[in-house]
Length: 127
Image 1 (cartoon, one colour):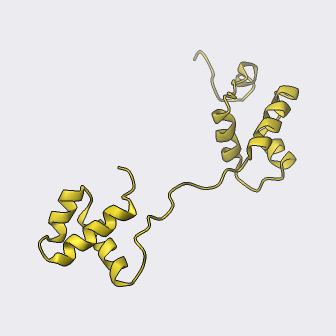
Image 2: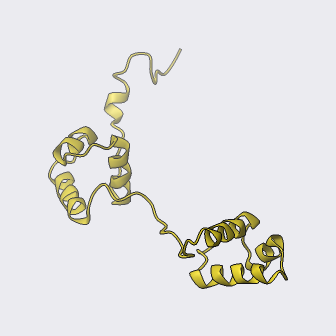
């Protein structure tokens, strides 16, 4: 569901103040949870504005320029490891973050079938 606008929040608070509606009725009318109505009322009672808080996620680890540089680096050295990429760009994140970034950029990794047989006790065929 989209974020409720400031106007919608203020209308809900005003409707509750009239005494004509309960919190549950307002929640049903505005298609939100009754706890949301309670939060709006509490914010209003504390004198806080009804402006929605910003939504989003963590900031990007790689900027657009760094992503372009990363793609160039991969083209130059396709066998570079995630750890080396981390060191080259001076990142403090986990290598899994770099891996997800590469996947978003369309870079996939292929398992080396030659190395599968070199591990003792793994991927054995026969009895």
